[in-house]
Length: 477
Image (cartoon, rainbow, N blue to C red; front, side, top):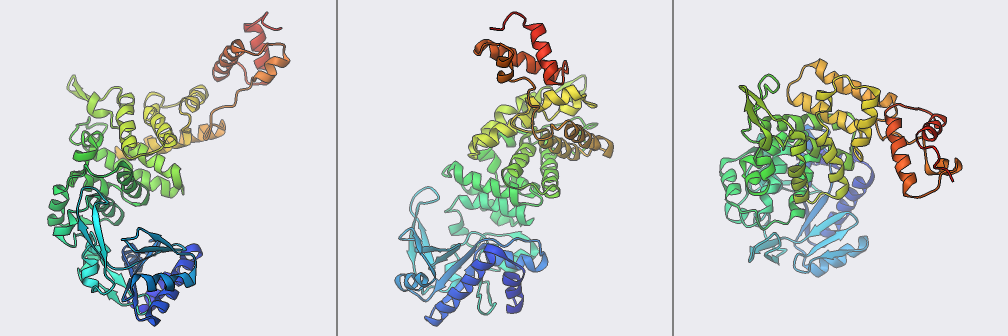
């Protein structure tokens, strides 16, 4: 990479916290050089800088520096000039400094099961070729000199990135870390890669039973929230046998037939991939971020996991009656496996449960929309409308059917229900002002009044009071 291009991508086209981190990395690299060493940018930052040359929308995130030629203690002393230094693991010799990870080249020797079952030996005098051999994939094995723009690429990562190939660096060491298989899944999805056949065989050979649920969840989070077209990663998860080994709920959808009149796209698995891609487009269009984005992506991924259990042929037609409800338990099992929190699980499940709402209510009344807003809690009608839209796109529905999602959302907005359920007109305070005694019986009265409100039996506080006095006379103090 030309130094001028690299400098522009790293500094001129970035701002805020990342730019400050980039400037700090350059200052550290200069100081390391003056001390007789060499600091290289390694890992994802080098890959992303190369990608950003072709696609300005690529976001630059973390910067990792690997320092050659300096022993651990001199490096620590050098870094303290720039601020407070935190060391992560004595044997790892990784220093954290104001958003930067700074490390010394090392060799990893597998001694036991698990992601942490390695003995680490640092050696600042290794060659870059040897140091980068421990990396998982060639696209992550490149180094970049931030002072000269020189690209160090002993394993052909630049060509593989250009050709969109996912290839293991070293077949012998690759299989020692099972997390690399999950990383490969999300790399394929995020960067639209094709898996090298030999690498695919390696991935299939790796047992995944030593991975913690937290680490598995981290890779799924990256796939679902960072990929423009997550379906590529989903297919990689199937091809790499990740689904077979870890996620039977998704594996079971492969090959489950659907009625062609409704689903010309193919089986449930094909439909799921199309739906997830559609949802990725919707969250970009609506600029949804954070937990809200992950909730919608999980809902799209899991909305039809009830079909394997419920699909049957009736009168020569394929049906999946009640798959919306049947999908709740397998969806919950998947989300628990990837360690999603209660808030996310509690929001995704009602979206799955009611994703057929427009099938049964193609032209919903105000009353049915009010009831829906209550049933969905803590999810919202807005979220459900987006899920139904993605589902429709995933079944190759025509424009008229897709427009029904927008009409549902517009009706909910007009009723001020797109984001929340209706506020009850009647409260305990109002009942006490009318002479009703507090206690369990008051709760029953309030529940009945709220049900009547949803049934449109009144729409003002005065009407609510009149309704209560008529239905529950003689209960005042």
